[in-house]
Length: 85
Image (cartoon, rainbow, N blue to C red; front, side, top):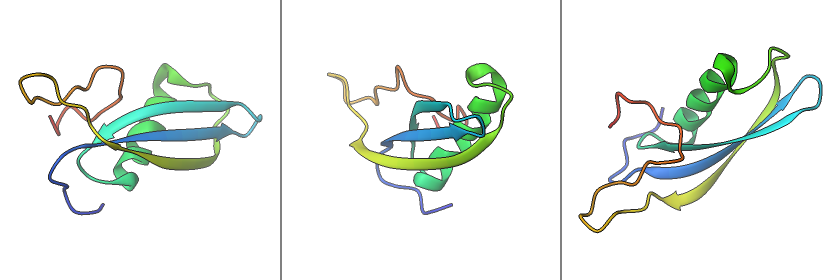
């Protein structure tokens, strides 16, 4: 894992299955792209995906997490590790 960042970052993780299915998952983490991949792969294996396995995986950084009017991280719509937040 990389160093913890000063503010969480949004990622889009694209998972390609061994059967050719493509799944895109949005992830929010403080700990870099490797952590985003780990969160997405874990979610994919637990009811988000299918049992056909992961053939390939890509990650794209989408930029810093949004803030609400109180300056709090907006995490709705993103997978995350609840231990980080």
